[in-house]
Amino acid sequence: MGPDASEQHTQGRALQAWHLALLRFAVTLEVSDRQAGRAIAAELDRSGCRDRHSSSFAFFRKYTEELCNAIVRPDHSGETIIRRHFSRMADGRLKRAFQAAVELTPPVVIESRSVERRRRDLWRGLEPRQNGSR
Picture (spheres, rainbow, N blue to C red):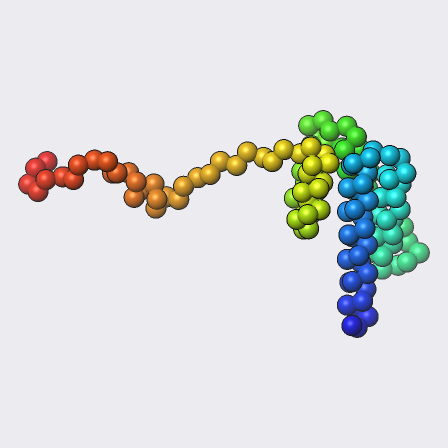
């Protein structure tokens, strides 16, 4: 494992910890769990910034605040934030747990049949046309 692979592994573990912290907050709504998520977000921001002394990169801190506020007060805009976070999650088990914790109902999916199938079914049930008759 080279330095880049090792750093990626460390960042992957930090992302996993961040997702778990947000899940824990969604379950408990405890201030201490929210603070744990903030701390991990700050660590992720620091690791994502090339200049280690700069605090200009704040994606995870801002996103964590936005998501935690949405979890506490799930109004219409909050639900959008929660759904966006849900759609970005890669781990299926974590995703299902988060969905249950925030009581997120799956969006209604309307299944559309392919055009080919619709065309094939268009004449189903009709008698075939007789030769010579119009």
